[in-house]
Image 1: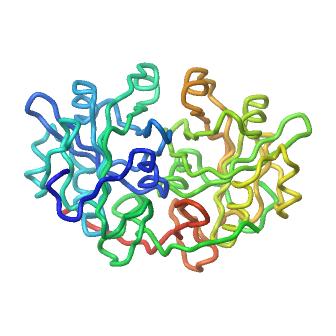
Image 2: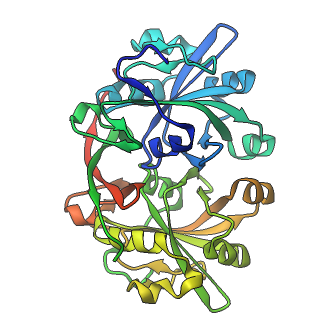
Length: 191
Length: 191
């Protein structure tokens, strides 16, 4: 279990529920003593079991270099309280300097992969890349098998999001410095 | 211009902005006098220009059959007011009967593809499939080039979402009959 307060296991066949609503994510990576973190809006669940995700990572990014070298990455879901850091890591390259240090981003070791979990986030998906050279080269598209998943029990438990406090809600990227906060849940019947 | 009130052109390099925040979509398809509509949460932007999207469509679905036969599809973004219909079309197969008729879903001809736009939605992306047999067969993953994009000017104009009235907000799928409404926008500075 990662050493993060309120962190609880999410069963792998339920990992897609963390991503179904389209939140922005932080992608962390590590290889050979180097590490990085970037922001990504272009990501989605791809399969239930084995759980998979798809994510777009630009070919010129430092994250891409570390992902391809290590074959691993972690998706961490930042809450509203971290939006400024999301924008910051999305606006700079790790080649300019260590973004964890520059922006005060703390990490916790993952359980199954070398890339770290981002502290302060509310859910985490540890992923191993399913190599698909054509997708990676033609579309900057990566497929990851989720090998471990975790969530902050204050906002995700029993396979469902339970958002209350504004600062702990997940966020959705628009453009520039603009985000949407995940809004109210509602239930409908088919009509 | 599609015959939908408030419908305005979205320039193709800005089409990704319609999808950046991860809303649920309706996928419509048509071929040889047959048509269908389904709901999908697993979709994301894939490129800016030419604009592309990625979407997961189950191999057993009727939509899949029509998409592969026609090489086309349309993504329509339903507002909260349509959530019941989203759940309904997501809970039944078009092989059981025409879902447009069964659930009172109106359509408008698209400009560049045979699949229809769904009336009552707030944005539309007309797409041609970029054939990628391995993705389609191994991952149920389709890549579409966006060949036309439209949005309801009441909620999307000048390249930005401007949500106000609750019933016109886009929605995000959780599970079962549960959705989140797109919440408040906020701006941050990198910190």
